[in-house]
Every structure is written in C-alpha cells, then in structure tokens.
Length: 249
Image (tube, rainbow, N blue to C red; front, side, top):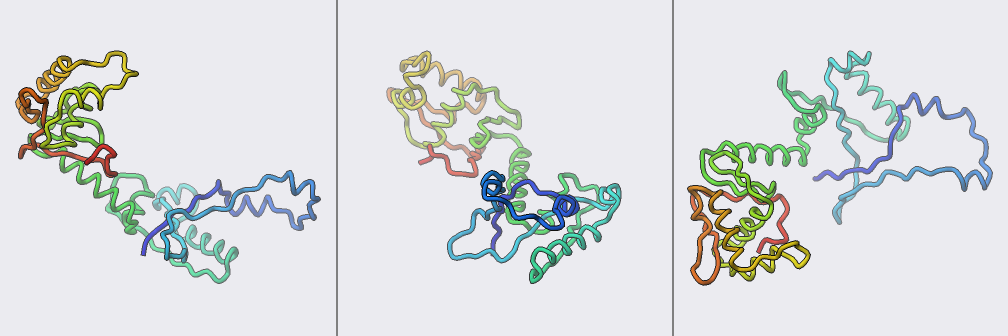
C-alpha cells in the first residue's frame, strides 16, 4: 500500500458553489462553449505501474479552538465533508479519524495530523529532521554537510567560501584517492571564471582551507609531488544529500 498525490485547481466552498450555480442552466451556444474557460481536472501523480487509485486521504489541520472560533467544531466539519462526498459520489465509502497530539505540540496543524496518521512522507521527513538534529548535537568532531553546503567544526559552523567548500567537497567525494592539481583546476574552474588558477595557486587555496579546518587540518593530506587526498577520521562524519549527488562515484 502506498500514497500518491493529487494536483488540484483552486477550490470553492460548497455554499459558494451552490450559490453560483443557477437553478436551470440554459443551453450554451457553440460560440460561448468555445470561449468559456475550462478548468483542468485534477490528476493523480506518482502512481506506480501495476497499481490503481482506490480513494484518497484529505488531511485537515484544525484544532477544536480554531474550529470554535470559526463557529463550528470538528464533528460538524466531518459530517459536512461526508454529506458533500455522498452528493458527488453516492456509492463512495467514507471513514474519518481524529489525529491526537500531545497538548502544546508545536508545528503546523496539518503536519501534526499527517504525522499522527502515519503519512509515509511525513514520517520520512520527521526522521530526516530528527537525524540532522542528533548529528548537530554530536559532541565535537567535523561534519561535512554536503546536503546544505556547510562545514561544522566542534558544533560551530566554519566560514568557508563557496570555492573552499567546493574544493573540500571534491576531495571528500573521492575519499582515499589522490587528486592531482591539474584535475582540481579543470573540474572546479572553468574558462568562464574571471581567474583560472595555476597549480601554485591551488596550493594557496588548500592552505587557506586547511587553516580554517584548524586542528582537523590533516583530513586534507598533501601527497608530495602529486596532489591532495581526503582521509576519513573517526571524528569526521559526512552528511550527504537525500538524493545521490551527480558528482558521487
């Protein structure tokens, strides 16, 4: 079992719909039919081969206090949605479940509802955020966060320039392989750059990077006469993006 998503156009309340609909619509002329704007029907996305749509879930994020402020309650909202469903599709079956959360729980109402009702996408997002928070609370060490393009040293962000992080990332993604200076130049600088460095300038960039690494500078090793290499240490963790990097071997 899995969930897909539905692309929907802007919707209107049932009351507005009924008010806008005439009692008996006159037949439209061919010209009017041609000129009348049409709203594309909602379409279902991400339906894998071999599956079929058997219904949908509509997450409604509202607590009792907000419902009361709007002059209603959760029970009335549920009954109104059930009645509307019965009008549109009399054979449809409906089931409503109330999402419960600890009092004072933060976050957007609809996100809390999705998580409480075990929406797979919401659960995956929650785990990802929790994992990042756990990593951020790790004591000391180096975090090379490729997903967010940042370097954290002993729980403090390091002020790398864009090019310095690119250089570090290039070495990290090729862990254990010695990278020649010429490869760094051809891969990280293009002819369109204002200043394409030579091999001596690469040494300067590496020295600046290592200076910002401080006591962890030896994670970028110099291979004399060849180039540079990234070596993993026990106190170094790499946080990759959720999707594979096109630069990852």
